[in-house]
Length: 391
Image (cartoon, rainbow, N blue to C red; front, top):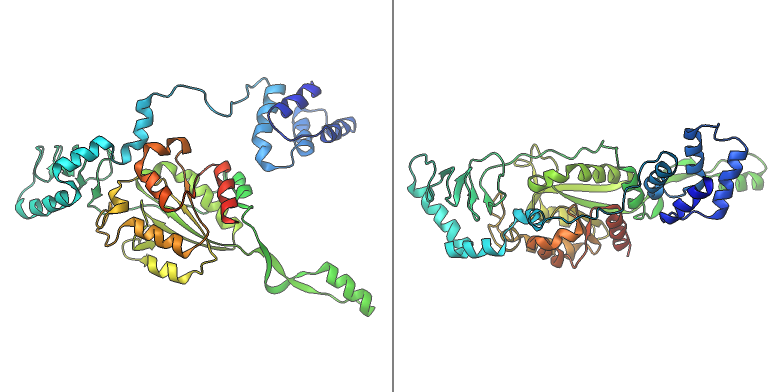
């Protein structure tokens, strides 16, 4: 059975050598496992696994060999209906939607028409296809449907088709105390390390103390500053809207980053970067921070990590006033370009699976703006992103 265990681990791609296997057998001969399955599990794990990233696969193989639990495949081999995949792209405009918008006269025409109807309409309206109201097919209002609407007076999205949202929205800050599931993220982030001794001398310099004592003939204690990760990180988190589906993984990344980086600054935005960001989602409308101030405050040696699904109307990237929540004076693409021009090392982490990016035009647009430095928010994607930042 032990030989089978060894071969199964190797077949699962775990880098286990014969020397490590013999070490496990020596531990069994010394009765270190205590003659229990649980004891054998911990003994084999500490003997055979040297990298935390391999713990999950080890557990799967152990369960298969000793408990009869089937190993989970690396990927689910199933035929996914095309319609399901297309739903990933519902947050932005399809080619058909774009054609229907153009039939309405395009972005400028829609916004001009909204101004006219705000001036003309004098009462509440329900149903219909013209006035600002509820439950109809007008491009303006709530709880209806239109592929190119301006959502007004509706608590949350239903069809994800609005090209602009007129109402304020409240988001929740990411919880930096979240620890569950952050271990593997921390391992990936550790690639982004450059240690230096900083601060006051508070740590014993053992080598210096020994050398000084030998030279002087009496105890000569030497102290040095603690070693810290000297890498400086600036993070931008997309919150609200479609990112509500990815809050857990964003919180885990945030929590891991707070632990790993002493020099960490973070800000929130919604969908695309514009002229301001914020630190507190509760007070985001009263205490926002000018993006220009951020670009001028932090030196260019900061490593920038943007976390967002990049799923939005293309107007939010390309048009003045295209922002879903406010009338932005400059297009989002310009602000993204300013960030990449200011900071040489910049990556975008996307929680949407990489093989689904092609369904979303806005993802491709942002990926082009940041010079293809977009990576999936997976352990493998994090590893690639950290390598990019250390170039």
